Image 1 (cartoon, rainbow, N blue to C red):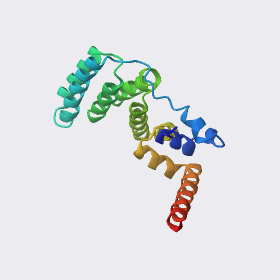
Image 2 (cartoon, rainbow, N blue to C red; image 1 turned 30 degrees about the horizontal axis):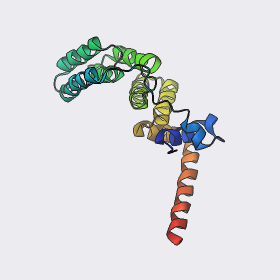
Image 3 (cartoon, one colour; image 1 turned 180 degrees about the vertical axis):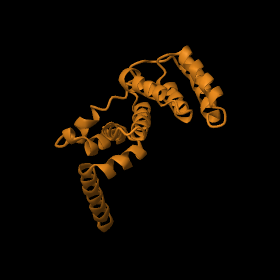
Image 4 (cartoon, helix red, strand yellow; image 1 turned 45 degrees about the vertical axis):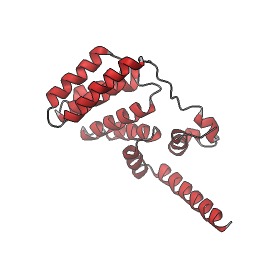
Length: 183
């Protein structure tokens, strides 16, 4: 069984997973979406979403229209909520952005680590902007566990335990590399 990146990150960032084997941790990383969208509909949604993302910085109003269209076509399409939250952030509508991210995290993002890592990281950034340092730290840690590199860097820099685990892991990997070269 191949060990996923998510399992390694869970091992490094979750103190509760210490002492478990990576195989056992890999079985706790859920990659089965709670809601399945038929392939044909998903392709339509992704096309609309890509168009919205492409124009978001130049025409946030049109981007918002396209993302709203995605959501009205399929209200369980979590990625559209993430991107709509990003547009709301650009428009400085942080309350609406947080509502979308909360919905993804608590209701429809289950089993979609890639979507969730973006949602947690975006929410962490907004919380930090609003002065919620504790909530921001928790969300950065969640984003890091799910594989977001930005969240991981911030979580490691702010968490001495994770920093220590990272150093130990790097030392072990360095030793293994050196042993392999010697043989």
